[in-house]
Length: 104
Image (cartoon, rainbow, N blue to C red; front, top):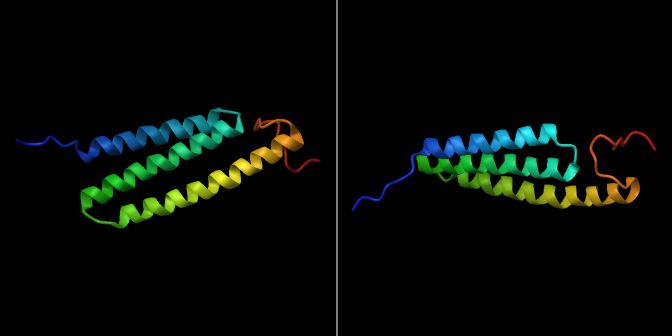
């Protein structure tokens, strides 16, 4: 019995679609938390591409890059959410258009 496999091009197309959705969401949305989630979606799309190419090339380097990207994403989530909480406390909004950090 032959187990059917999904070709790497399908995963790369999936990664490209996820990245495109993330870019469009980050550019069009005004809520800072939604923009933050779109950036996380773009990071996950890159992770899908790294894992796909790592598996296709039989190399562990892609998996190592994914661990680094996940560590950066976790740190970004912690710092970003702390910034959003502080912005909401001081400005009472997290709308990107209404936040101007250079003015008091």
